[in-house]
Length: 210
Ligand code: BEZ
Image (spheres, rainbow, N blue to C red):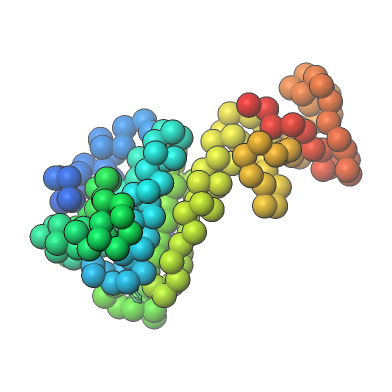
């Protein structure tokens, strides 16, 4: 079944390059990113895994655990990891799940049969500390993902988890944000005592709270 925003992120147990992972236990009360790859030893996936390895400090800084998935076995993953280091200069520093029987892929609806009936599409799930799905992305196998964009969305999700604000188009951390429409001007005066810039009554821009 499709996974939708706000759903509980399904739990699972799977082998990985870092041993058996019991997903909820491994994740604990951190944020998590679970992202899938169609297959080992494929060119786009190789570049993606190296990029995520290079960005690991940025995920750590945001209290986000990252875990990849590819449908091949742990042995193949270990052999492939050498190529990832050779090609990208970054070594796998997060677990890569093995999913040869597609248990996790099916649980997270990562196989879209009209695209490919055996390999996963490029799915991304961002999961909050309370194990709710906060973002889903689906890219085709032929398009590598933009992981800077993923960090940008995580910054937005973490900001809106703590403050009654939303983030506008192309927002980046540090730029002005939007007071949520559901907040009355009266309540906004308390929450944002320095005031805001009302471009429209429903579009009130304010400095990023944190
Ligand atoms: C790739 O990672 O390069 C790839 C994987 C599956 C289909 C197409 C490209």
